[in-house]
Length: 310
Image 1 (cartoon, rainbow, N blue to C red):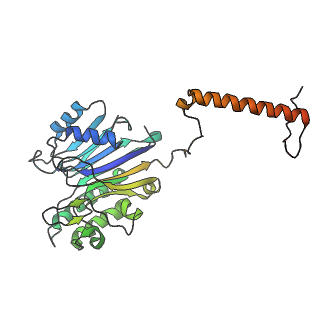
Image 2 (cartoon, rainbow, N blue to C red):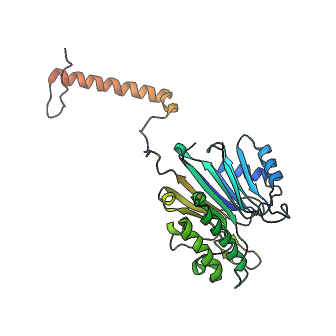
């Protein structure tokens, strides 16, 4: 179990023909945890992903109760190359829209991760979105030991419309207030926005209207924020995925500090004939110079090397 892992979140917009893409994305981006939204995935499809890539991936998913293959759906996929998947606990909070896992982390610590896919806001109507956040708020209020270290996904609402939407406009206050109350209860912060307070970047581009918005976010607690770095937004190259992926590199704050290491000559240089000949020549010259200093003693032109002990 690594002390530092890369975590990503992506709205994948459907399940069809994306099996290989999921595996390739996690391998190439070196993701330890990938949270997916709009997966159209139930337990059966989750098992298909695991069966295809059982050596690398462990899948936890939650589908829409009535139409799991056509709408909604969330999943958390763990990469066995980087995380210990044993004894991971899964909890459905809102089927198809919110799911929590409790997983192993470094040095015996547990990590609570919650993935969400919130309902859309429609113009000035944010009631359904607000009710979603209130449901999650109530769950964590009643289960304080399960409050997340990380909550990520497609929020379908922005908190600062003047900077997170193009064209700029604020979202319904009912929805933003409900989300804010959840953040206060759980102590969560928008990691990317805290890192780049004035920067504009968007995760979703609506082709029909040309509008853009930063709907996809990773929220984290203070302790997690202090030991995290590389908050990024980037394209994935997955076919038909109309959202960009958000990522962060998370480190356990109790992990030992690791420096840059010592300088060393690369192994392939040590076998180079020209380098070997050069090294021998310079070594012999240095040895002769030391002998000369021992014989003549230290001068203004030559440093003194004390004689070897008897």
